[in-house]
Length: 299
Length: 161
Image (cartoon, rainbow over the protein chains, first blue to last red):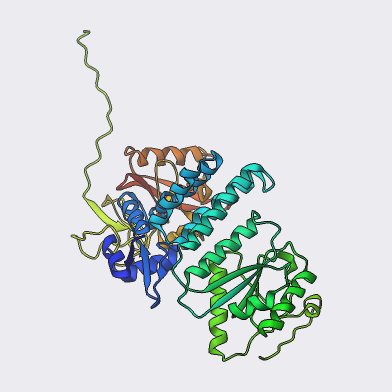
């Protein structure tokens, strides 16, 4: 994916950098990513789509709307490919999406919406859904294999509390896992059902944060697992991702539904923990999860 | 051939007007005449459009730009205030969601639709109409309709008495 600095994007659109930033505030488009130094990086595809739309538009708003439509065509292509059970075409749609956007945005703006469309059309207990979800899971795992090696000294343990690996929340968890890995963190998903041998794994993995993902497993079982994690790794920040109405856990942050927002939230949580020199939010034990009181324990 | 010639009343052709450019958001003319970009350098939030000098919006006038499919394509800064809607929320919606003819005795919304269709398609002459916000009775907005572009569209200038 080709990216442009603010000055390059502004030059391509024949406007000033200030105008480009004003458009971002007013229209939310083009939506830049951030470089490691927090500078704006625009995707060439988005800027080019806007440039073309401006030539024929009557206002910036209508040009933005048209440019967005041009980009959202990828979602239609992917949903169409999945509906026709054409895996090669589905892979091709994602390749096309990645040519215009980051992997993160391709997942959030093309892959997950296409799956939502499949779920709405066929239901998540249908064969078409299983076909689509399996393809999506494989795609996300493949993308994770190509993620750059960890660059941060951050390790995130994910407690998988999903009903099955093809559940929509499980796919969102895979996306979350991919985003964390691409942000340079080490990630390890483990089922919350298993506590046997957990200590040995955690002694090696040494997590900095725990994310409990999914709403299928009951609070008591999650609490048992969380207690085992705490016994091995001490008090850690805990966050809940797509835990639904089961979010009764005290001391845990509830993450946004979108994997992109959730991964940023978790990394910020870990970073702030390092900055505060270990004043962590308590990892709850099983009794605390069942209760409603709030308690903080320092490390 | 009968050989008889009849006199006919013809509408005199409207004198060709000089064209002026204005921003589709702030309504102001471009800062310089030879600007290369279509984006207004003054506000940065509108595209430069062109209309007949006698039909273009004046300083501080509220206006909308509507295309030949009756879709709102631009809402000026002042029209946002008058209609109580931001441009990004108004574009791609039908103009009749915001404005309809105010005269209950006169032709219905089809009059407005026809005029906009004509102007948006490149025909029609500027005209004055009385509108009201859709769903809001008792409010009358004097307006004038004219052509603008490019691309070809109808300009609905509000508050012209």
